[in-house]
Image: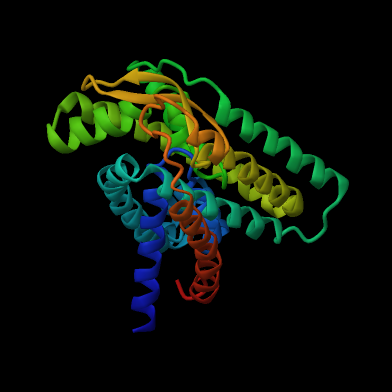
Length: 325
């Protein structure tokens, strides 16, 4: 019974990661970290290439054990379910309740930064400088102007490599990197939601396969880099991840002034570029597309607090279940 619950908990952690990766600004790596599976995930993915040689000499069972296959399988199943839920359900919530939803994510990420920062055992000058550098980098990413994107398969492949690498870093969102690359709408909606799930289009399947191949290449290489960093420079790595988290808060700030919009493939207007403003300034905006000017201060703050508290609840659950899963 206890093992079954642990397996279910792992699937749910994967689902939470999957939902997070469909939301620009929210990182699946953050969810993995706070649920206590981050380093295990890196080690499991990083062992793939050595495990292939083991498969040749000792068989599939040895390969499966080396990569922690049962762990990966359950996590991957949860992520697939989470991505489907995020593509359909989260887009509804963000369309109809954008400010409270972003408030929840702001609280979630702010608490995550505190959680990760507490893992630094000794704050040296180099750790502080790295935190400031990565925070500045993440902040710059949040204000960078999105690219136009391309349906070239080579570009799709490179986007897969970049997006999956961002997914593995707490504080950087794979979906947000796709947004910056001009490919968020193309990959998640035109290709996955419309092309594959709704229209069963072969061309969309090929495009999604190329994107997936890029993800595989990216995850196999970047996981080994991160595992090495955790093993040899743990405090610096934690400090850098804390900076990424802090810098990314600008992206999930609920009160946004829309500066530029775009027309999607359905002819619908969407937010392309926005700027964070204070709640009082937000209330004075006129013609603020999509967000309006109702600051909804009470519900947003309540959701921020709930998101903040959620991290520490999940932390306790992750600590009690990580060894069993």
